[in-house]
Structures are given as C-alpha cells and as structure tokens.
Length: 362
Image 1 (cartoon, rainbow, N blue to C red):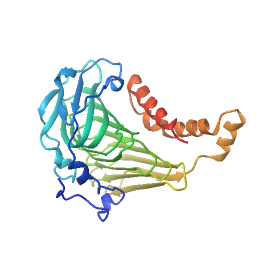
Image 2 (cartoon, rainbow, N blue to C red):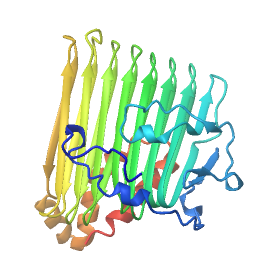
Image 3 (cartoon, rainbow, N blue to C red):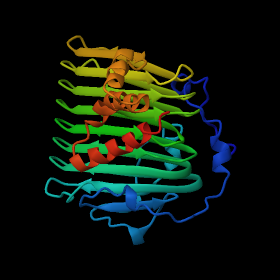
C-alpha cells in the first residue's frame, strides 16, 4: 500500500484534500478489538448489517433481503473508489419487494485500511432507505453503485464518526425516468474525510439531491466533491452543503452541475455555505455550472462568513451563555442540511449527533 499512487494537491479535483497520511495508515495492522455498537443502531425495524474492518459480522447482523458477497461499485475511474474491488453487499428490490424499515449498516474499523463495495439496484416503483454509520480508527474506503429504474425512490443517509484516521466514500448513480435519489451526509467525527459523487440523471423527469454538513475542528480536513449530470430533459437536482470550521480546520465543498445538449427544461440548484468559528480556520466553496442546453433554470450561491454578532448579543441579553449561543446559531446553520432526511427517527438521530459535536465547541 505504501507504493499506491494517490492523487496529490497538484490535481485540481484533489487540491483541498490531504492524502499524504494514507500509506502510513494502510501499513498498520487492525487490532480487531471488539466494541459495542448498540448506541449506533437507530430504533427502527428493518435489516441490520455490521461490518468490522470490512468483514461481515453475521452473528450480529440481520440482513433481511440484503445479500453479502460480490458487488459492482462501478468506481473503477475513481482514484480511491477503485480500491473497493468486488467484495461487499448488494440490495436489489422489485416493485413488490420492500424492507420493513431503513436498511441500517454500521462500519467499525480498528486500524489499518479496509475497502468495501456496495451495489443498490431498485426496479420500477421500488422504494428503499439506507442508513450508514462509520466509527473507529484507520482508513475506511467505500464505493457504492446506485441504479434506479423508472419511478424508483432511494434515500441514503450517512454518519461519518471516526475517532482517528481517514474516511473516503465514492458514489456512482444512474437515475432513471421519474426516479428520485437523495443522499445526505453528516461528517462529525475526529478523522479527515473525502466524499465523492457522480450522479447521472439518465431518464426524463428524474430527481437528484446531494449534500450534508461538514463539521471540522483542530487540524481536520473535510472535502466533498459531487457532480450531477443531467442527460435527459425535465430533470431536477439540488446540492446543498453546509461547512463549519473551527480552530485550524479546513472544510471544502465542490458542487458541479452538467447539462447535456438534449437535457432541456433542466432545473438545477446549488447552495454552498460556510461558517468560520475562528479566524484561523478555512472554508473553500466551489460551485460550477456547465450548460449546453438553452432552455434551463440553473443557479448557484456560495457564501462564507462568521456568526452574526447581533444574534449573539440578542441571545446573551436573554441570559444564554456565549457557549450555548454559538451552539444554537450553528445548529440553525446546519439544520437544513439534515432536514432532507425523510424518516423522523433517522433525522432525529443525526441531529443528536450534530448537537453533540456542537456542544463541544469552545
């Protein structure tokens, strides 16, 4: 792994990511130490899968319709995603097949590097929800292939909570006619991260939404880079990212919309906002539009700033401590990034995780 060719800051798409520590992490040996994951399961029915260092733990899982085995992540062009190989988990649902609740997947890492692929295929009119949580230490690398047939609906929510190391995830999606895909990510651990996505709307009237909250402190580096490509007419897409950086952290979000020549009547929107909790922190935002059709409605907005002093003063005048006031305003800043999660129990769990992180802000 030390000889692995990794992207560098000289590559435009990776200029905000620091991968220099990955070879050293990959050369370490996982400890295999057992840990409780009871606090990571959300109290909802449905399949539950546990992976420890990339290996499936059948004794503590309830897979339901989810199959564990070979998977096609379709990320062979991604510098990190291609390492996931063909081992992983798959979920295939037809019109009349559904899970009783969200598919919950917990990934535990105990050091070193582990790679895992996932393949999700929804047939016509199928619906599914997937919730993933990542904890531990080391380098956890994931790649997912998502394919939605006509009128299928998929909601994906992920929590990245590693104590140390690096977290990377690459999504490749094909969204068919009138299908809908929503991906919401919460990065609230102590490790660095890199999230990538390439979502293609292949059918007319398809919908895609991607975004989340990147929360960083100390010397953390978080980087999210998503591309949504409209290849058919009457498609809609939304990209909404919220980045919070404290101390010497760097949080970056790159959102790109590509509209093909035949993708008329496209409606694409980007909202990138950064919040600096300290003058020593940094937030990088990069919205992009590449449009070849002439009848579209596409727009983007990118802003970086600090907490509003008038709002802080107002809360202080009501007896709220400065620490609590900062947490309240920061919660409001990231709340809309988590509001996209459909299931109440899942959304509340993610909000609780974000609130725990915000409560530690000095």
